[in-house]
Amino acid sequence: MRFDVISLFPDVVEKTASMGVIGRAISSDKIQLKTWNPRDFTEDVHKTVDDRPFGGGPGMVMKIEPLKKAVQSAVGVVKEPAKVIYLSPQGRKLDQQGVNYLSQFPRLVLLAGRYEGVDERLLEGYIDEEWSIGDFVLSGGELPALVLMDAVARTLPDILGHQCSAIEDSFVNGLLDHPHYTRPDVFDGVAVPDVLLTGNHKKIAVWREKQALGKTWQKRPDLLEKIKLSQHQKLLLDEYIKEQNNLKR
Ligand code: 4HQ
Image 1 (cartoon, helix red, strand yellow):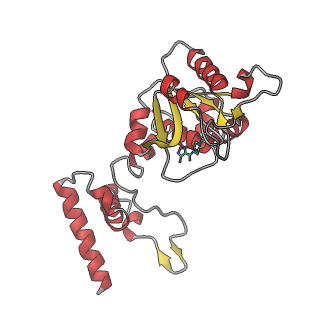
Image 2: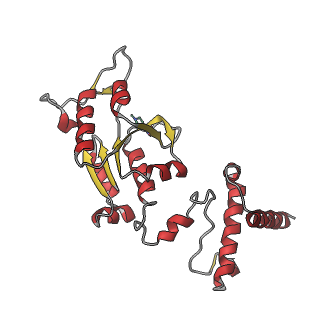
Image 3: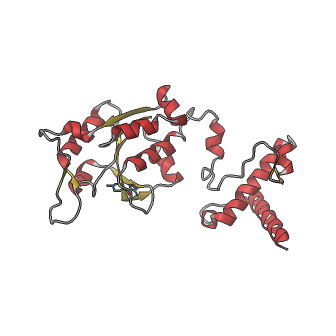
């Protein structure tokens, strides 16, 4: 999969994307990333990318001409069709379902805005979809673009060292992740759950499933309303809830 990110801070995007599993996926050419600076598409001596808003008011607006050229250059750089995305709080809120939807496209062009945002006519003419990473205001679209890219990239085959970790992760099955432990087996007098030391993989899988259900019930009950539990899962969650009640008494 190929990502093209349009940003006034291409170094930030490249540097951040070069870390960890995503960085390795880029180095090994499993995913492609190219950044595009709207400043390189200006025509004036000052390389102006922003201007004062019509109607007045505080802040600046990103000019449409350099952005249109940047988007068209990014889209046209290879023949593969691209989905063009603008990151903004007005967009569809990103969740794992949205991430899975976006991961089916061979190319994403991500526009990271600055200032008060972009000229509305750019959205109307040159942007396919608008996405938000949450209901809060950031100072630029770079972090949202990186968040989207990270979440999408890690769903792709052969990106994570351990592909099952992507499958078992939080949200992928609609549930939160189960708890994790590593050495030492006792810390501050608190022991790791016995079952994890048994080597009984079937029992461990059942325990983890029950924990994922229980943690979701405790911390994010809203998620349970979105999915249909199997009969086995209902039984495990009932057991978890009963165990919790016993601990309280
Ligand atoms: N911004 N999710 C304003 C965001 C944002 C978000 C990006 C701030 C666009 C112009 N983007 N710029 N939340 O707050 O995606």
